[in-house]
Length: 398
Image (cartoon, rainbow, N blue to C red; front, side):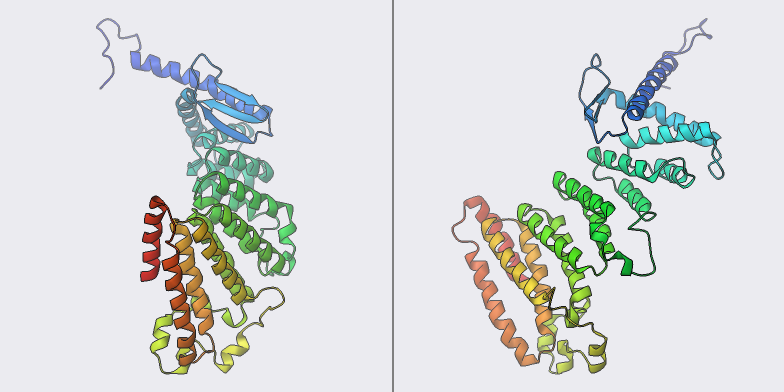
């Protein structure tokens, strides 16, 4: 419709559109072969980038295991590779055993496509088939994913594909008991995943996908006290250097809740409590204050005073949060984290207490927080003061 019409007498001559398409596909084929050869020549490539270069410049740069691709090449490479991938996929019988030539073509084309666009479900699913039939090793696939994350750190599909691979190797393979996972924190594969998440979270603000992956990895520690204590220390240090990151504080919430679930003793069910603290103050029946019945108390695990003291942990975090709010005024993430800490802390103090005892604890705590809100806005610059007042007022109303 939009092409140039052929002139009379030139029916055998291809249109300008067809000529351009053929030329571009040929160029795309050449660029694809160059890129595939470069990736094959250096299996230790650890960083990918797209470069703004002139067409006279080299299409690809590979130095010190760093791969750069010129922007102008990307549409041509992707268009040709996508068509080649579709043709190979159509001709290959992926439901059965894939032939050697088709396997090689699928491996190369999918690798090229995910380097440019990692949100391609079909490519990752084909690579799963190649892994299952042994054509692609899990180790090389993990290295490819690490390379992809250097350019596309927020690709949820790529992170999901990584978890699919990890579920098939130690120490993440599902097992019937948690006893054999006591030393998972020292496992090299565990440390690699934690380092990968730390790198991507540090270089990409609020990388939800990296934090979700780290949480998935962390949950495999089960009840390993050493691992949980080390992770609590790490996230405290990380939060202190990234005070504006909501994702980091959200991850810390999960670490604290895991401590309560695994070592909380009588506080184990505090995060699951559906009865609001204010409603407890209005109840005259002491059983509504969160007391455990005799039968429920027998079901609670003994409190691990030697390793974790939940009350002390939350009090320490509250003090650290107060110091950071004064040191870094105007950050909403700090005030939202404070709400979480006090929600859990108040519920913990409500356990095994009568109505009068609750009032005696709650009122001084309320007054102290109102004083803190007032003093948190003193001696601040105009810009910081505006944000600090807004967040402090919201906390006060909460």
